[in-house]
Image (tube, rainbow, N blue to C red; front, side):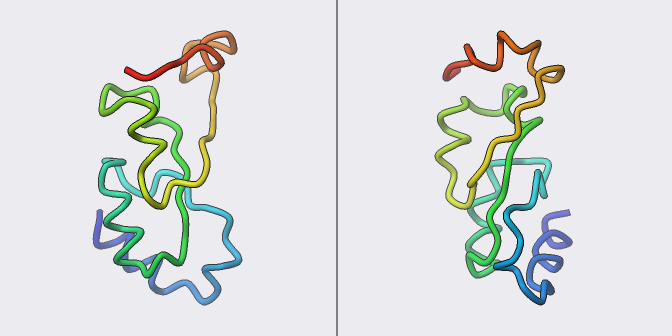
Length: 88
């Protein structure tokens, strides 16, 4: 899947026209590597990975290449939990 994502990003004709690609990889910790190997052409957004135990929010949001967070209240446990989530 990693190589498919890298190939896709490298083949984009106008990557600067894309605001972000949401969750291109299952493992968000690979995003900095993908970002660098793709020539820093496209940035990424996170959503489902924020509700996993993969890493703390602060760590995920600090990943190079991550530019947006898409909050889905139903995935995160409701509106009230979206505003109160903190580092894990």
